[in-house]
Image 1: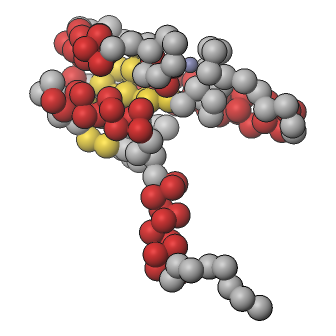
Image 2: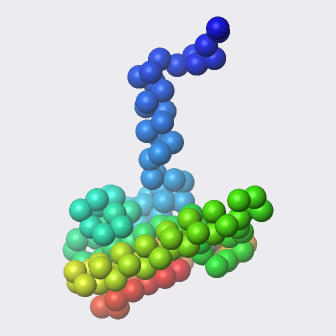
Length: 149
Ligand SMILES: [Zn+2]
C-alpha cells in the first residue's frame, strides 16, 4: 500500500499544532493593532476561566476575540449547519453557555471582561481598526466592567 502521507510525523505534529492554535487571523489583527497603540498584554492565560485571548494586567481586564460560528453569536455570520443540525445546535449552545459562565467567574475574580466578535472585524458590520483601537482604549482606561463589540 502506498502511503499518501508525505510528511514525517514531526512535521505533521507541527502542522497539527499550527492548525489547532488559537492564533486565528482576526485575533492577530486585534493583537497587532493594540500593540502598535502601545498596549501590552499576556496571551492565552490558561490559568484564568475560559483562557482569555489577551490579558491586560495593568488594567485588570481580559479580552476574548470570538468567532461568531463557534461561539454562536446571533449575527449575520452565524448560521446553523443544515446537516446534523441538532448536534451542532447543542454543541454551539453549550459553548455559548460556557462562555457566559466563564465571564461570570472572571467578574467574581475582579477581572473586567471584553469581547470582540468576529463580525466587528470582518464582513458587512466590520469596524475600522482605528475605531476598534479607540473603543478598546476608552474601555481599558475606564472603570466599566464589560465591553462587547
Ligand atoms: Zn457575530
